[in-house]
Image (cartoon, rainbow, N blue to C red; front, side, top):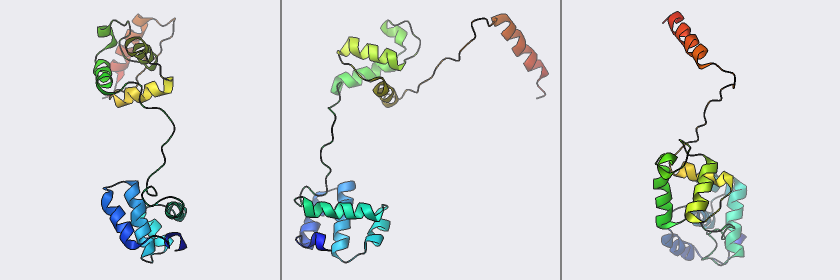
Length: 169
């Protein structure tokens, strides 16, 4: 318990009252439990993590000021390039077929979204992020089923009729 020797239970309760929910609150609750004598194994079970995570959480209270200990440090990465009303407008546009916006394609693809974002909003994204944007907009990636260049549409239709006629159900 030496990690929490310099912190009082009252300070931890005050901090807990300032945090509504999420991982920061879990970290404070774990510190309170440890200060009250709970074993690491008990805390890990209670919070659904492994003991090492509990030790890491408690180390924060030794290494950082109490006000910062429950919170993660800022992570790298910039803010969203398209935000606010522009982002809402983009998602509204993604609900329309691309043909309504002057494109030749019938459905949105990651590459088309990248092109559209660059042309309309002047921003460039990595292709993998385009898939995230499509998902966030509520779209799923669908690709056309490939057709062999020598495939005969008439033979295909005839085959499908034969299959339907021979279907035992």
